[in-house]
Amino acid sequence: MAKKRLAVFISGNGTNLNVILERKTELQSLLVICNNPRAYGIERAKEHGVPFWVLEKPIPWDSLHERLEKENLDGIFLAGFMKVIPAEFVKKWQGKMFNLHPSLLPHYKGLNSIERAFEDGADIGVSIHYVTAEVDAGEVLLQDIAVPSHQIPTMSLEEATTKTHECEHRLVGKWMDQWL
Ligand code: GAR
Image (cartoon, helix red, strand yellow):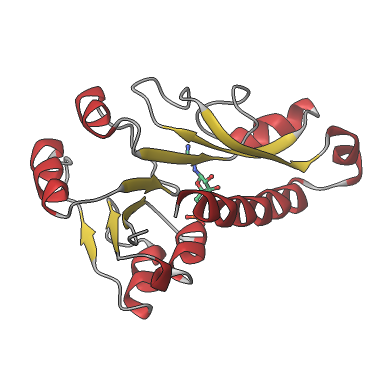
């Protein structure tokens, strides 16, 4: 089967992007799109010689869609992209756009998911799901527990966060195995 073309949207550090960058030879093409000109993820893309686009403010969603169409993408992966994507844009990519979220969806949608689950003493985990117009609500494709609730009393929030990020990196790898 032909190799696929992927765009990864990021806003920050890009540790999950890094999992994909490390496997870029398995892709036909890889493009990084970032809404934050100071994001460390841009440095990661540069190190791997992967093209990146820095988005203007406010994000010109219509022209972005047109530019992305020209790339003949097979998929878009949101790896820590912290902007809500307008429904119109989502509709155009529905079924081809995936999001990584640091909780066991449908629990703890939105921001500060790890902190909120930790404070509640609930299982902390990671999900990868299809993106739909409603935030963090599309069908879940992959999910894993990073910290089971019974371990939370023995752990600091920092430790739980580290374990969650490690779990994310594993899950992004699994998503690639499945999607490629
Ligand atoms: C990750 O924890 C990801 O799950 C989260 O942002 C972080 C990005 O880390 N995404 C969301 O919260 C989306 N709602 P990274 O830049 O090191 O990959």
